[in-house]
Image (cartoon, rainbow, N blue to C red; front, side, top):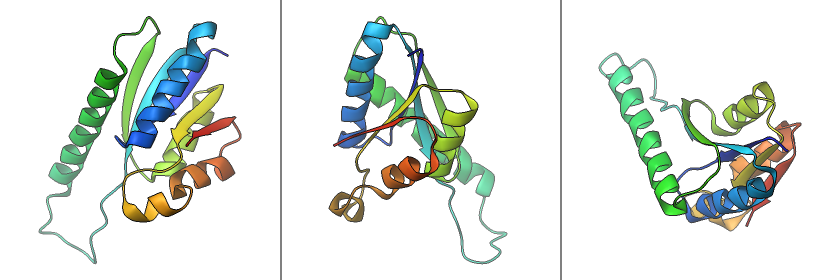
Length: 140
């Protein structure tokens, strides 16, 4: 195992997933990429008044903060860790990065932020498990 992709949204479950990914990576000295995917904002109809470029930039900055907070919570590590923020449909983007980057494993929390997602296995985790051909570890 050489490359592990960790998806995070800043939730407790995703932080737990990142911790597990780091534990798995250590014995293999695997490189870890921590990914935050920002879902696109959809506005009803044609909204020329909406500053979409500014909104996307703001959302990407929020994704950067999520990554910074995640790495800070995990503390120092001797692992080769990189980060990446992307804008797009969350499960599909995680899957695309995993496939195109030839990652050996994808790790994510069982549910993200939001009350509805806490009721069942998170819709993102469920969708990634169904879309991704790479091994997927879902951490409860």
